[in-house]
Image (cartoon, rainbow, N blue to C red; front, side, top):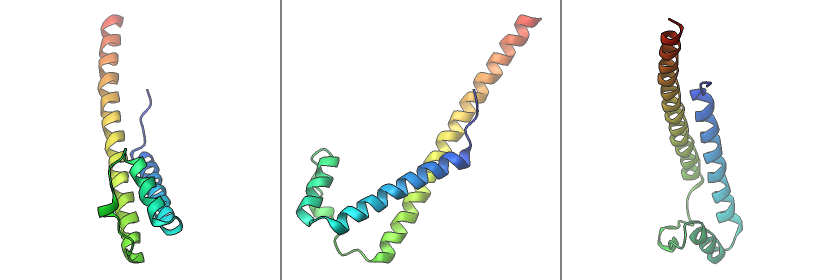
Length: 104
């Protein structure tokens, strides 16, 4: 099995999460409030987001949110790749040990 690049998977997940964040921003800027609430309620299986929606968020807070989302998703991707590679290396060591025992 191959190893997964920690940086590449981290970047892929970070960029995907940032795009999703921008998608949410786009929906909130272009869709009427009641339809936006209905949209997010349907995404969250009926959880009512009316009380937690912020319509007056400054632009700098949105940029900070995108950066935080990217960083957190990058860390998640890096940890997933790290654990995958660690599991892959231990399996590789076990397979190598069994192969060398058979060859002897």
